[in-house]
Image (cartoon, rainbow, N blue to C red; front, side):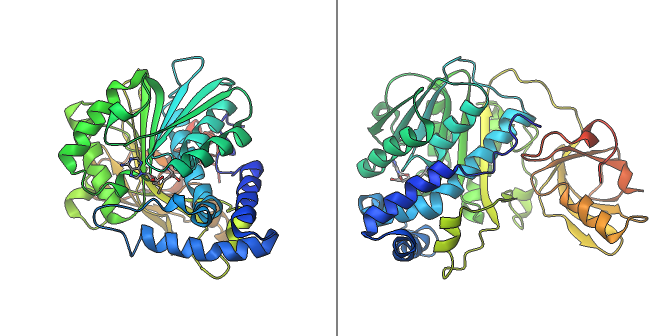
Length: 398
Ligand SMILES: C[S@@+](CC[C@H](N)C(=O)[O-])C[C@H]1O[C@@H](n2cnc3c(N)ncnc32)[C@H](O)[C@@H]1O
């Protein structure tokens, strides 16, 4: 079993904490409390999508009902998105904090979704003592973050928070950090343009310990994903800081020039029962967590083999073929894999063995459209949260 297997599972104690918070905020018990939470989720959902303010977001966490609604519905998704991004950095790229007692800074921490997830996963890698610092403009979110972190992480994790501005490092607690995570916050700072973001990365970089990692997560919307990708490409291209995920190299993302598709992750997960319950009448698609991310670190990490391809589309099953799109060495490739000789069941199993964001390997010469001779001509090199497939070493396992 891989070290990081199970990173798409949301801890039961985290779910129980937010159900209790919802009960307190809604002055009701169990399903009745969750029923009342729905309104808050719908209000937040509109704020994050159709009713996004052009300049400044309100402090929605000042309202205990909205805070609880966030904790039940959005927080588990941010928790798992952070876990999956870290999974790629820790397993595919083999990043580890250099300190034996890693320190995490969660910028735009809100109630702690990303920072608590990061500490929880690093604990599972054997780092029993950690420091977690949250910074946010919302004091009420930070109070919740501290209690939530203690509840889920237990002793051994020192938790503190500071009301501050993400754009102004002088408002953050002093010191350097092994991991700095900025989860779903940059999109709430629309006045930060590309130049401003680059300067911000430069400032954040100075607050990283040697070998530390900056992890930025953003919604999978075209506008937010493209903005992050542009930033990531400039950081990588100028050498400001090395990009370690999800892109496999420092080359620009070719999808940005066509503007038709944009890099984002879409990973299946099992939403907690309370989140599903709240969703009964909201009908959001909870089968997958969607997000985009960029991870940067100047740590000396083992080099990846050359010529790997990263999937930037879903895997389509069509008659006699699997079809998907990859980026290999900075170029888009539409790949077809013949499935001749396989039963329907085997084709489904093969298609389910990898997906968007995963990394494959084959020897076909570079080409915008290519068809492999046989399904055995490619290997799944890396797939999220499932352990390195044996096919990485031998045959494609079906
Ligand atoms: C969508 S929430 C994300 C919370 C958490 N990181 C997550 O992923 O679930 C955005 C957070 O960023 C905070 N925020 C927005 N702009 C900020 C700023 N300029 N400085 C500090 N915090 C900010 C908000 O108060 C809110 O807690």
